[in-house]
Amino acid sequence: MLILALDSTAVVATVALCRDDQPLASFTLKNGNTHSETLLPMAKALFDVTGYTADDVDLFACSEGPGSFTGVRIGAATIKGLAFGKQKTVIGVSSLEAMARNLLPANGLICPVMNARRGQVYNALFLAKDNCLTRLCPDRALAATELYDELLARGEPFYLIGDGCEVAKAAFGDLTSLPVPALLTEQNAVGVARAALALFESGVRTTDQELSPTYLRLPQAERERLAKEQALK
Amino acid sequence: MYTLTLYTAAATETEAAGAALAARMLTDESLPPFVALYGDLGVGKTAFVRGFASVVAPGVLVRSPTFALVNEYRGKEKHLFHFDMYRITDEDDLYSIGYDDYLARDGICLVEWSENIPYALPPHHLRVEIEKNDPAMPDSRRITIEERS
Image (cartoon, rainbow over the protein chains, first blue to last red):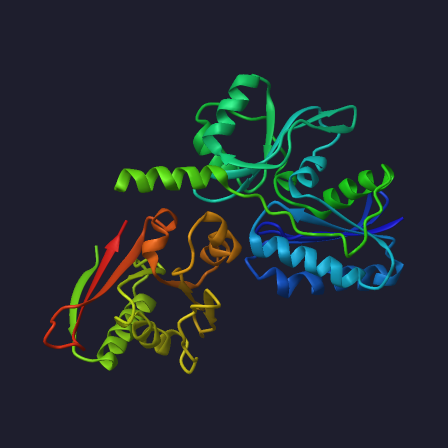
């Protein structure tokens, strides 16, 4: 099965063409350019060098969030556009799960974090064992300090990945994480393809029309703002 | 820390004040690329932005982004992102206009109605307050520019 996967939920833009769970070609860019201007040329480059076209793709996949508002929308709109009218399966996956999946076959607790600004991170926790990923909680937005409390309470060694690492580490103090190879610390669309393949194998057959961006609200930020406003009065 | 107080007697002078600040920001890299604008309705915030834009992105049409919430003006060296936070009431609104995405881009942000987002201003920014300063002269304004960090 030929899979085209992409992720533009953070600063990184990444596109991959996979044969089942094996990457054929991937293209990852982190130069600050606007995703709306780079994703399609990247996908075209992958098709050009491999000789495939969008018509050969059996499964279209993208990270549907959480992440930057514009990034999430650009990714979903791009994959919808590529899949439009092709009657193929289109699967949206969690950007956090896709990142975690790239660490397999590592074993243990995986903690992806994305910078949600103002001290917040997007996060979910996963347990990796025997090349399987088990989700321990839904995707959420929370203060990095809250995540620190949770990890401290769990008391397990953990892998920390994602562009929220800096924010998290600032809040974590001397609570350190397990080492991760630099190539695996941020989004790569191969993880998106693998997460989508896992869903496909479990029977998911969504269409381009059903794909929809996932935004996480920031209730904590709201609470903090209200508290600050109260303090100012 | 950069501070400056100006007095203007007409909208064209308020525009000139905006242009002067833009010229300064393009040459002085110690200044933050974020301008928080404060002032009542009709006090001349958009006139100030118009002058600012005439330096950073000459030839663009500047309008208050009351409905669009943010206007992008493409400049030669820097792009200009012109926000109007008048109708922004919470963090979800802010997220849904891509505010943080604009901050992460290498441009200059000019934010009208910064009063509405005190919690989301970058710590290092320029505060520009425009006020009517003389009831006898309805067109005169005091413009206070203050670097905050």
